[in-house]
Image (tube, rainbow, N blue to C red; front, side, top):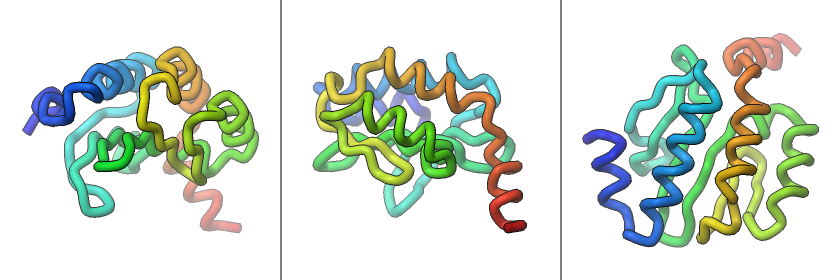
Length: 130
């Protein structure tokens, strides 16, 4: 299945935001490639930097999720976007939302642009050394 097929199979009221977020991720972080594969028991669009997951975009029954490993690894980034997204549920490494207004595409673009320079494999390797 392609990413477009995956998005087209989601509820109609979620397709536009999922498509927009997908486009924002690939436009703002040229270091990632995307693939549709299972993670945490469900199919998601996974965005990998080399072989390491950096972002993921998923649709669940109760909400949509933008998984963002850099906000899990960078407390300053987390704090910045936690403050900017008061109506979304910002967790350790993901942002859950039910409506497009909770995760505006412009803010998502800024988030991905802020994360683009982070080398996930390098950061994870440095964390393991500590």
